[in-house]
Length: 94
Image: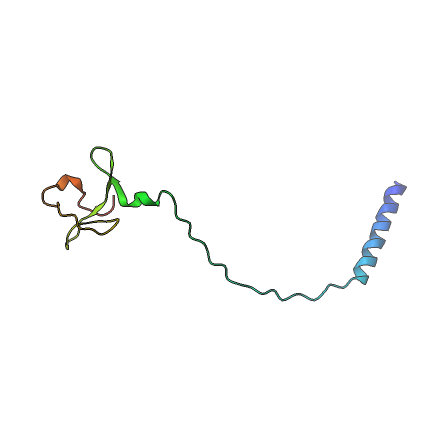
């Protein structure tokens, strides 16, 4: 018990001596800079331009618009809207 009291007393003395002698340094000015986020493309992002056809295979998506149908991935015209009506869905989003 005496050993515990002695160690507590020494700890209090050391704490008060170090606290009184060492003032805190003034705060530093930190230069800030803006970090731009890096956009990392997903490996699955390619499949946003493909849809599943009636056979279960991936086919390029065709956008059916009043100005003419076109492939979504490159904008090339899709000329078979009247003859191949099962090749595309008449709406943009599934």
